Image (cartoon, rainbow, N blue to C red; front, side, top):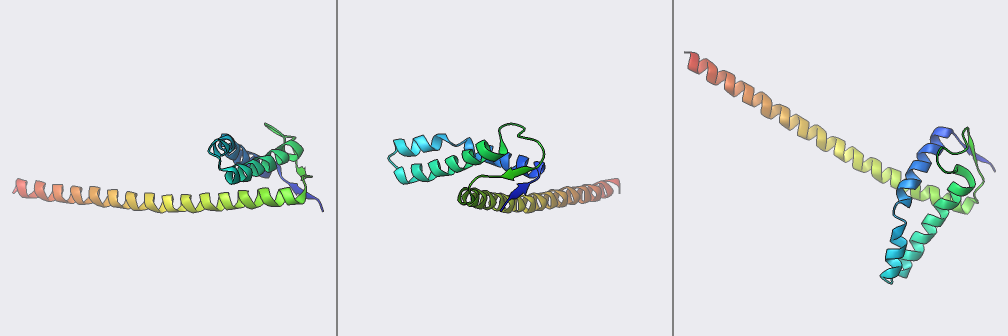
Amino acid sequence: MTVTITPEQRDALYDQILIHLSGIGDVWLAAEARNYEAAGRLGREYCDELHLILDDLGWGDGPGGTVELTTPPDVLRRVFTRLAETAEGQSAIEQRERVEAEQAEAHSRLVAETCRLVLAELDREQAR
């Protein structure tokens, strides 16, 4: 079975993996804290992601064109499961933030509108 992804898909995956790899020092921190379970879990995650970059995605701009994924299926399954969960979680957070921003904007509009109405009424009363 061959899985091929587009350059756009490759770039999105690569960017998400780089964000996660920025925390690679957490492996050392977990080991230093003698939390070997966390150190092992994180080490495997980073190992899987590095495997995908080294074997398929490439560093930087990558190979260009479509990318055939040759990384072993068990590694692909682990990486893509984690990436999907992360993306879905981020999407849910962004949706909540959009709703909160819309509510804040509606609140600000209501305050501004109320202020304009009250000030206009005060101006009319003063003009009488």
